[in-house]
Length: 110
Image 1 (cartoon, rainbow, N blue to C red):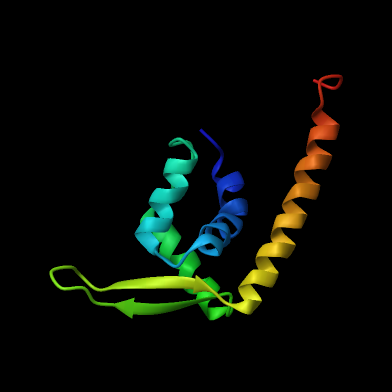
Image 2: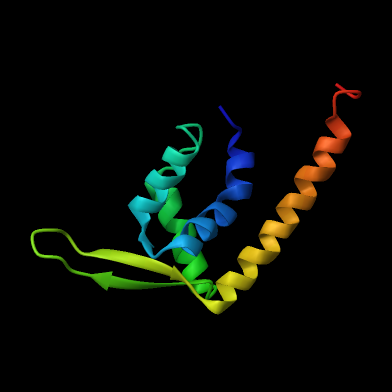
């Protein structure tokens, strides 16, 4: 439904937002985004993990492997202090961007 460019441009913000609430593994993050968007936003797992790895390399998140009996090992990610700063900045930037877009395409301009 949404263009790949729009989804790509919001992926970091969405992931950081999901991790602001709790430590989560990658598959859970993807499913949570899909559920909360009522199925309108879905990300391929390979795309999601490549972003998670990049965010970890940037120091925004930190992963830790957890083994549970009878289950496969999973990497649970959490925000770092740097990640919280990035989340705040991206959130503010997104609000400003959406506000300007709404002004430009408001009812009188449609």
